[in-house]
Image (cartoon, rainbow, N blue to C red; front, side):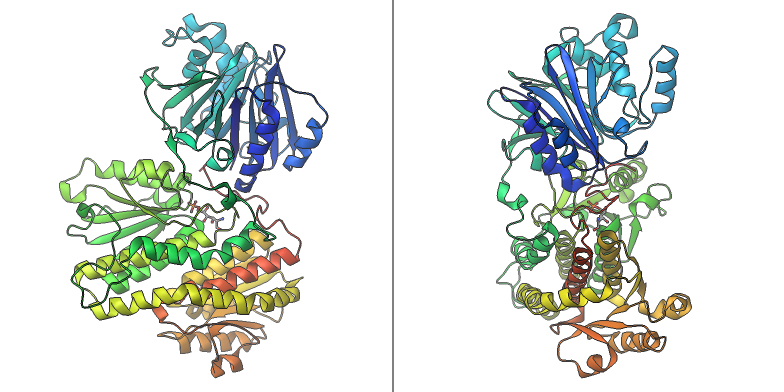
Amino acid sequence: MCGIVGYIGMQAASEILLAGLEKLEYRGYDSAGIATVGEGEIHCVRAKGKLQNLRSKLDGIENPSQIGIGHTRWATHGKPEEYNAHPHMDVAQRIAVVQNGIVENFRELRLELQQKGHEFKSDTDTEVIPHLIAEYLARPESAAPATLASSPFLEAVRQAVNHLEGAFAIAVISADYSDELIVARQQAPLSIGFGQGEFFCASDTPALIPHTRAVLTMENGELAKLTPLGVEIYSFAGDRIKKSPRTLTWNPIVVEKQGFKHFMLKEIYEQPGVVRGCLEAYTDSTWEASHDTPPVNLGLDESLYENLDRVQILACGTSWHAGLIGKYLLEQLAGIPTMVQYASEFRYAGAPVTPHTLTIGVTQSGETADTLAALAMEKERRKPLKPEYQPRLLGITNRPESSLGHMVPNIIDTHAGIEIGVAATKTFVAQVMAFYALALDLAYRRNTVSKERIQEILGGLRQLPGQIELVLESQERYIEELAHEFGDTQDFIFLGRGINFPIALEGALKLKEISYIHAEGYPAGEMKHGPIALLDAKVPVVAIAMPGSVYDKVLSNAQEAKARDARLIGVTPMDDKEAAETFDDLLPVPVVDEMLSPLLSVIPLQLLAYHIAARRGLDVDQPRNLAKSVTVE
Ligand code: M6R
C-alpha cells in the first residue's frame, strides 16, 4: 500500500526521497509525489502512474533542499489522478503531508474545516490533515492548551493527530519550520532511520537500509520530531518517550534481482534455501525416534501449550492458504480441532469464544490491517473472561519487527528474507514450514503420533530442498514453453483434494493476481456440484494428483473434466504411467509422503503463473491494483 519516505540532513533531499520511493515500489502504487522546503516555500511535485513520470517532471530542476517527504499512493479515497496524489497541502501552502492509512472521520473534519473557510482540492481523506495542522498552528491557544509549547509545529501536529480516527502514519513538513520533520504513527507502519547528522523515515525498512542500519520502529500513538541534531519521540498526549534505535542485520543485496528478470522468479528459486533455513531454525538436525529430547524447538511460552484444546487461525490471501495447510497438519498430526478464518470476516463475526484456545495470526508482512484488527479484537473480547478463556496469541510472520511482532507475545519467525514480488511465493513455503514445525511440536508433546512417524516426516522434510531444486531444474524450461499456449486463455480451473486443496487455491490466486486470468480453485470432489458447468475446450484444468489417500479420487475427477473436453494439466508424481495416460500435459514432481506433498506441488504452479504473466508482458512484481502489504481495511 502507500509508501512514505522522509529526509532531513545535509544532503539534497529530492534524490534520496526518489531512491527511497523506488525501494517501496514493490508495495504497489498508482501515483507518487515529493515535497521539499526551499527559500521559504514548499515545492511539491506529483505525478500519476509510475515513479518514472515523477522523475521526468523533476528532471533538470535544481533543488538543494535538505528536507523533504515523499509518497507512493495506492488509491483508497479518490481516483488515481495527480490531484489526489500526495503530498497534500493547506490553503496557504505552508504545510505538506503524506499519509499511509485511512482517516475514517475525514468527512466530518472536512465539513468543519470547510465551514471555517478551508478549500479542498482533492477527493482524499488525507487532505484534511494539513488543513487541521494549519488551524492549530494559527491559533494554538484557543484550540487546546499547548502541551509542547516550545515546539509550535510539533504541538500543532500533536493536536491534529488527536482528532484523527482510523489507522494512519504521516510525515509532515512546513515552510515555516524548515529544520523540523514531524512523523506520527497510529496503526500503520513507520520507522525512523538514524544517520550521522541526518535522519530518515519510511513506512518500510528497504527504503532505510541503503543509508543506515540503526532503525527505530515507532509504536502506535507516538509522534516524533526529526531535526539535523537528533530525534525526539513523544506520545500523542505530549509526554516525552526515551527510546533507542536497534541495528538491522539485513544485507542490501537481498533487495536486488541478482540477474533474475523479476523478483518473483528470484524468490521462487530461493525456496530450497528457505526450507533449509526453517529446518535449521526450528528442528534438531540430529533428532531420531530413540532420543528423549523434543524434535522441534520453537521457543514459545510453555503457557501456550497448557491444556490446549483448540486452535483458530486468522489470516488473509496466501497466508490464509498456508493456514488451511496448517489446519490439516494440526488436526491430522496433533489431533487438535482447528478453525481457519479470513481475518476480514472474523473481525466482524468472530466464532464463539472457546476455552484453552490458541489463536494464530499468519501474516508475512506483519502489517495486514485485517489480521492485526482480528487479533486485537480476539485479545480484547477474551480479557474480561475466566482464566481458561484468556487470550493465547501466536504470530507467524516473516517480519518479527512488524506491528504483529509488537502486538503478539509469541512469534514464529519464518526466516524467508524480504519478499519483494507482490505475489507471495517463498514466504508461503516458509509459513507452511512453520506449521510443520508447530504440528510436529504438538504431536510430540501430545503423543498423538509415534516418534517413528515424527522421524519419518522430519526425514522427508530434510529431503525437500533437494527435491524443490530438482523440480526447478527439470520443469522451468518446459513450463516456460507451455505458457506460450495460454496466450488467449481467459479462465483456468485448479483442482486439489485433502492437503493439496489449499494448493489448488494458491495456484489459482497466483495466476489471477499476476496474469489477470480468471482462475478458480476447487476441491476436486466439488466439481460436479456446480463448477463443472464452466468446462469446455477453452478452459484448462490443472489437477494436483499426488500419491496418497485421494490420488485415485483426483484422477477420477480429472477424467470427468476430460470428458467435457477440458485440456488437462496434471501436477503428478514423476514416472507415473496412469497420470501420463490421463493428462494432456504433465508437471511431474518427486514422489513424497502425501503429508509433505504441498511443498512440492506448489512449485510448478508458481512457475506456471509466473511464465504466463511474463509471456503476456505484464508487470509481474507489481501487478495492477495490488499492494504487497495491505495496511488498510
Ligand atoms: O502480509 P500478509 O501475509 O498478511 O498478506 C496477506 C495477503 O494480502 C497476501 O497473501 C496476498 O494475497 C498476496 N498478494 C498473495 O500473493
